[in-house]
Amino acid sequence: MIQEFLIATDTEDALRLKRNKAKSVWYAGGTEINRLNSGVEAKIAISLAKLDLNTITDEGSTIRIGSMVTFQQLIESDLVPQWLKDAALTCGSFTRRNMATIGGNLSLMSDHSYLCAALLASRCRLLTANLTEGGAYSEDNIPIREYHTYHQQFSGTLLLAVSLSKDVRFVASKRYATSVQNRSAVHVGFGATLNSEQVIDHVRVFAAVHGSGVQRLSDVENAIENGELTSRSDVQLAVQHAVKAIDDSVGSAEYKRYIASEGIGQLFADFLKGGAK
Image (cartoon, rainbow, N blue to C red; front, side):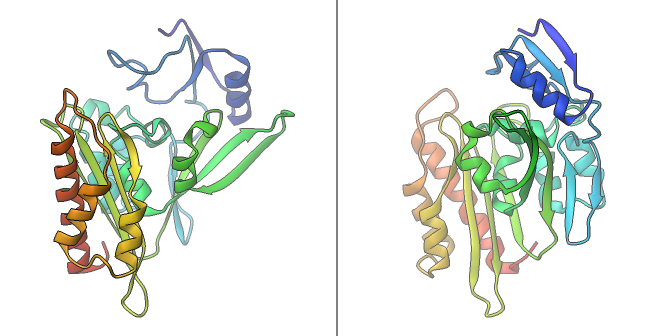
């Protein structure tokens, strides 16, 4: 339960407050911190409202999306690609979309995330800020796959922005839940490109599975790139074997594997029809 609310004056101040205050968290939209039965345990909230991280800008070859940009801003921006707008729209509450931020949703890397599967499939990059052990301020530009793979090691790292390449790439995601207000059982993302010889490459396949985390299906990716999986049914079968799932209140492990395979299979079929989105 939050007992103290602090406001960071700049990025470096936010990092120092986080480092020096035990049981503290950064406060963006507050949708997870204030949620009933939230998994976030903290006594101190550090607001990022004054850090000017709420803009979307065209930077030539990339689109920079500040980490405090809300879901609704994503949906309303002319700069944001449709696949990311579609992911943001899977959050059915207009009120929540006006509060929830891209950075907050991504930083949790949770199995009920609205955006993680799509962003991971996009091969976007993340602009981050950190303090060295000696206290020196530094910024970095990292691939999102690195943030996913070593997520625990980034607990003290502040997300500044998401950088989306304008290169032609198919990216899409699908969310499965009993209603738009309920947590998803599975949320899948698929991304790929066709090179100059019309060969599929840079494949990314992710599944956020309730109770089992956000999973990268590397074997499926490699098999698609190597030409071993060429049809929707091939991909569905491979995904069913690759996805990790457990029985819980949302559904059985078998059900989750099935809908994950159906979702990724459909996205793969959509890619084959168009090649880019």
